[in-house]
Image 1 (cartoon, rainbow, N blue to C red):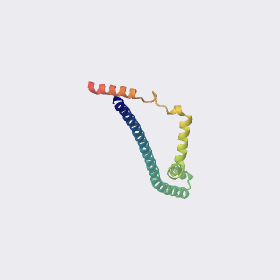
Image 2 (cartoon, helix red, strand yellow; image 1 turned 90 degrees about the vertical axis):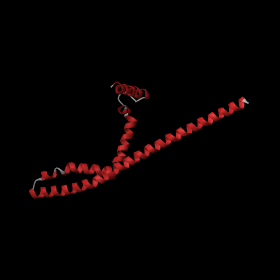
Image 3 (cartoon, rainbow, N blue to C red; image 1 turned 60 degrees about the vertical axis):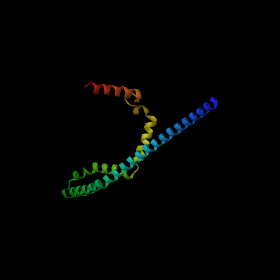
Image 4 (cartoon, rainbow, N blue to C red; image 1 turned 180 degrees about the vertical axis):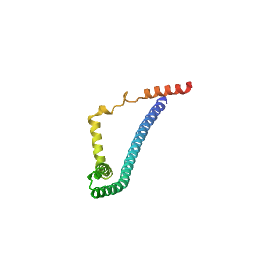
Length: 147
């Protein structure tokens, strides 16, 4: 009788462990999906912001370019055209970010850095560990309790 009871308990324990492992895996997958969803939303918000900024800056750039060109022609001073150069760089960058391939090029460069320049990505003092966090937490709690 004890053997049957022990066998049942062992099988029950094994089923419980499998369930816990499956549950942990499911939770991790959900966390990864949530992080990716948040990242995608942040990227979409950045692109939308760039497109909206481009509308206002494009209007400003157009008015400034027309005004500066008219001023340069009327006064016969080509120096009035010089502010158009830096403004055109900003306009081109914002256009490329909102409608062009800048994000794809940035992604490619980031992948290249991850593959070939891994040493530049290391944190000072190395990776954060649980022990480091506990040590800092204990030091901070001593600081607050001593006052």
